[in-house]
Image (tube, rainbow, N blue to C red; front, side, top):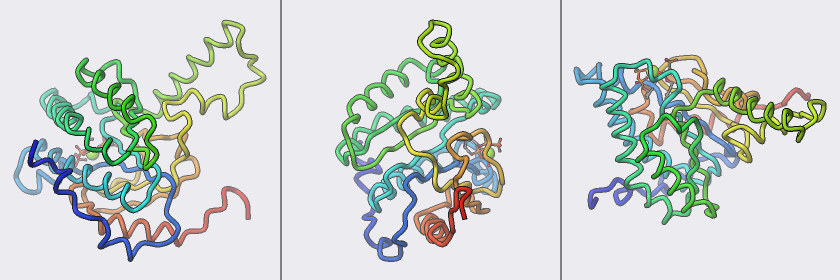
Length: 251
Ligand code: IPE
Ligand code: IPE
Ligand code: MG
């Protein structure tokens, strides 16, 4: 583990001067374009996932260092099970490798939170995810939210089931259900809505990512593929975000 990316983490300082004063409280990243990045280089798609994972590690630490309080990353969607089994296996192996060295986040006081239905994941992954969540639960520097086997519709289905059970058991009056009731039952309970949603790779869609939490998000799309979406590209997104007027329906 001597060559861990964490040890090689570049200091964020150099780029900090260029950043705007208004930073989003929650930045969501849809890490798309790994496959195309590899294909363009005549390499297998899994090569792109490896490169994408490296970039994710770097940007997650950069978010922490520049003072973003909540950063969420779309790792694997409920729809991604449609992919060839060898690609799914490669992604899960990369995720395992990542989790194996994620203790380093704890030293940096980053709280790790996993959202999605983890029951379909390998036992070793579930065990490690629970462990990291537990060991980091008191950390305040940044919430690092990883969406794995996550789907926004599946999340709302899951919340609805929990609420329906409470109604059935006579613990909740249907007339007392508010938006807050629903939020409390989402995987993201207690976390803030997304302020800035970033999707590289040229696709202009949410692909089922945090659909409830993005209701008033600002969107930033770029053609750059995820493995090339580095700190400087992220800085551009932050500068662009700072110039936007958010009204939330007001004037
Ligand atoms: C995103 O990159 C990674 C995952 C969905 C796991 P893709 O694999 O979707 O890359 P493209 O979109 O095919 O280029
Ligand atoms: C979204 O990317 C899922 C993740 C990045 C994990 P996809 O590549 O799966 O999305 P679509 O299929 O282009 O909508
Ligand atoms: Mg894709």
